[in-house]
Length: 255
Image 1: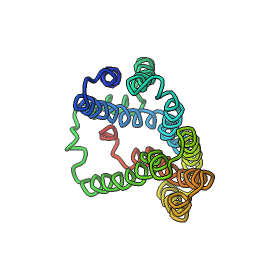
Image 2 (image 1 turned 45 degrees about the horizontal axis):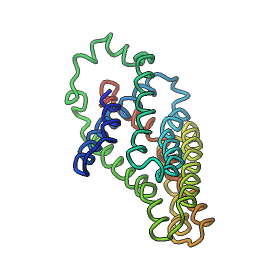
Image 3 (image 1 turned 90 degrees about the horizontal axis):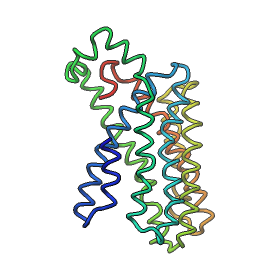
């Protein structure tokens, strides 16, 4: 609910500082939604399907990015407030989904044992601090890997290469198609070769694509580079939800 309210409120910001404050809070709520949603999804599905479902779950992000790049074409018409209002649609959808999705069997089983009520977060991670530090450092690196290659790429195309909005939108869409494919491919592959091997393989495949992605000069080559590097980047990310879920102790997965 907070996620949806803040999405609406952002569109009515009277100045930049209010907008920044609301987006900070929006991100806080969105992070809570994502973490708990990932835990719920992966605790509900059969173990043998976790890899591919992890890829599907993670690639909701580039699908949203893809749709946002399309919506960006309407920016001159509806303005930034209108763009933020469009973000309310999926936020409201979450409210409907959450009301009709039951608790995960794993959580229900933990509750029946008294674990969910009696075990605090500190108790759950007691003796597992090295694992917790490892996961935090790993995810810090993962976020540099993902957001460092995605978030400002449209700005790079527009400012450094002076491409038109239509070209920037097309290349951003190509980027996200590659991301979706990568998540599905490597999420599924992780069932065969293991989570860590799939992550490492995808990450290594990004390295030879960097020159094409960063230093090309034509839209075609830049689009190809963006497409290929995101297969690798989101290929590695497609394994992240299931890898975190399986690393975490059952009583602290949500946290």
